[in-house]
Length: 225
Image (cartoon, rainbow, N blue to C red):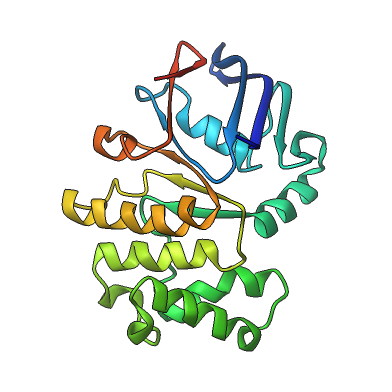
């Protein structure tokens, strides 16, 4: 399987008071293109740290992160920001929708911040909302939607710029079991089945079981389950 993300001997530590805490140690791993990878581990094991490194939010102390053909650790802070905005999609546990914007405006906002006009993005955004079953709610405010519906909006927003890689941090963690399963089925259809890669952090055994690969972080290292 072709890799969409490759970690090359990654180290990452954080300073906590007078002590330096090692989070990841000599981690090398390849995440498959067009596949779902679940990342698991105990609280504080480094799941969010790993996701932040892939998301170009943080940089390793040693080693390199490659996304496609790009070595993102070699980019400047501004270049990483632009890469993240233009090349990656994000789905969060708490949806992160802006309450003063309509559903449609929430979907188009990241593209507008990237220089695209609202008019230009309206048709593809409505198409995505149709695909997630919410085209009829495009003019409503997020607080009129259920949690599952808000997460569907977040998925549409993440996919608007057609990223090859989607990153999700506990995408079902704020939903009940049934709604979470429905959202996960939608993510599956719109990522892996569409040829995109999805890397997600999850505590749920049920959600992880849907992934092609499950990676657990133990003692700073990545282990395939």
